[in-house]
Amino acid sequence: MTQSIEAFKKVEDIAMQRIQSSKSLKDIFANETKKSSSCQSGFIHNPASHTVFSYNESGIYTLNGDPSNIRSKRATLVFFDESAFS
Image (tube, rainbow, N blue to C red; front, side, top):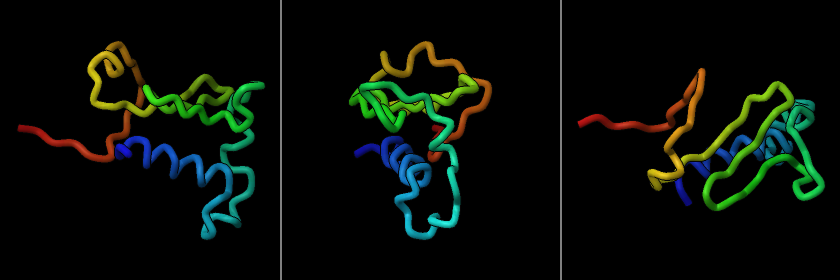
């Protein structure tokens, strides 16, 4: 499992209140996700890119090492959990 998928699943666990230490947090993000008949939680687990979208049109995408998956992504704000420069 890649680090981006691990981070995505951690966000999902927090939103769905599956983490014991976060039980006191009420309705954090889970009620703001766009849901469909095929995806009741709003968290889509597509092998190419795990995604979740909210009603304010923001979204979370996992990016894998495949260049075609990374190409043409645009963002106003980007978080990196790890990076390296050579």
